[in-house]
Length: 156
View 1 (cartoon, rainbow, N blue to C red):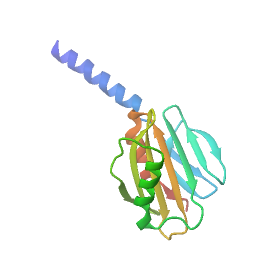
View 2 (view 1 turned 90 degrees about the horizontal axis):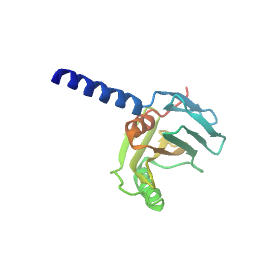
View 3 (view 1 turned 45 degrees about the vertical axis):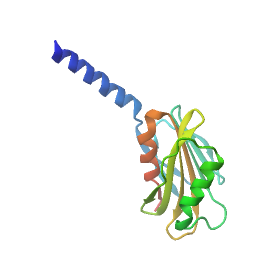
View 4 (view 1 turned 30 degrees about the horizontal axis):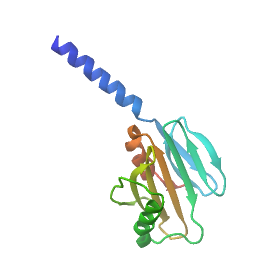
């Protein structure tokens, strides 16, 4: 009896985990040749030179090119803290620096009103430009948000 209850409990937990995780696939903002992973069932809300916004019922991803030459690697953390304070992000994580193939970056997570959010700045390693990325997500998609931000690259 215990064994069958244990098996049922494990099956239930595994089905819950698989439902909460998104299937991620590559997507691209062709205006600037930026690619990253996004949920497979994503809908494109805006694909212009001003921004790239995609969403489904669990995640909204917004990518914007910063005007000018962008941010230097040394400016990423302070700029990120400034914008998250301006937007009143609560329960903020520490800022995590990342070193991707084509970008230096930093991100933090926190609460944005009723959902969770990830804010990030990525700057191209040659300092030619920088991007601001916000990912608004349901709590069950926290791991996906981290996978998404770590997947950013330039198209080759």
